[in-house]
Image (cartoon, rainbow, N blue to C red):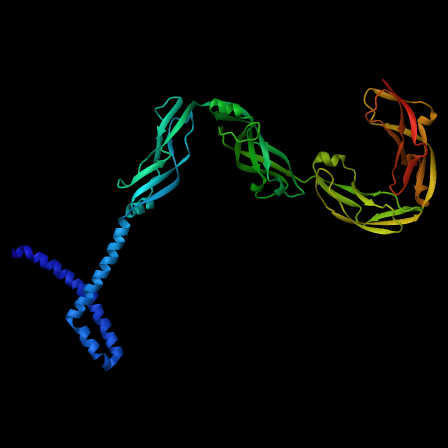
Length: 451
């Protein structure tokens, strides 16, 4: 029996040695420090604390307190609890080259139930092995289970949803013409434009279920101007431009596109043209006055636009209201961008208008032109007064004296006129906008006939 009890004594001796070294000895040191603080008045306190029984009772009390705290923590840690792993991805096993799967959710929620200790370890190394095995199934509709291989067998789990109804379709393919869309064009420098886009390929292959392929109306390369590292004039290559398939309503169709990304070459240009600024007065100045001069602080402007817009542009108009103007006046005007113009070198100008006494002048035998005559028709004058007209000029004498018949155009607007005889208003315009033009004969008779 001695041989059996000696190990037991050794264990308890080790425990007592630990308590003595880790608890009693530190407390004794604390008592001595407190005693030193109190001096002679602390002798009784020192004697009481120096007793072995006192130290044993204090150590026992502290040990019980520590035991209760640890025990409570263990109890709390061992209680059952639940944790939810949100939106966990599903691993699907099937022949991706031959089939298309519909109806299977992309993610599921996993509810884990177990002790807090087990849940803690499970969250530190969560298993992502959520499997659906469709490898042995043929085309058609199937109800399948979604399985979760938990890391710890001591944890219960619930998958939501735990089943899914999937439809397996044979995968078919089709060739589609590839086009492109330019995204975020407003991020491009206003003085520049994308002149040309060259795609790496004109065609791509789309794969998927037959009914999905029938929905595809177009496949586009989405070229994002925001992806350009720089916007220098010239050619720039963009790599890995994503492709998307769309239906007739512009909604994305979920099909496989081969390739899924391509390279594109973008040509950036900055076409421009310098044109004059043309001030156009609107309304009539005060009675007895006429405009003698119109001057501006800027006479020309550089416009930036597509080549076809620049080809048609001869000037940039700026309209000013001169109605009932009685004396010289200065206008601060905004130069509005004409349709199709992206940017201009001048956005504001100052216009100075000077007035003098009005004078009149007549220009005789100004030939009448015909505008907007429908194709297949011609015009005949009913009499001599139907082909020529006298034009009255109103303006400053020095200005109107310089004008001749070549500077004035009289015309009839025959838009929407058909075969027959009509009395049509005569309209007049001239090269100098400081002058008012009017036909002495307001209307003339003409005859429209088929050719």
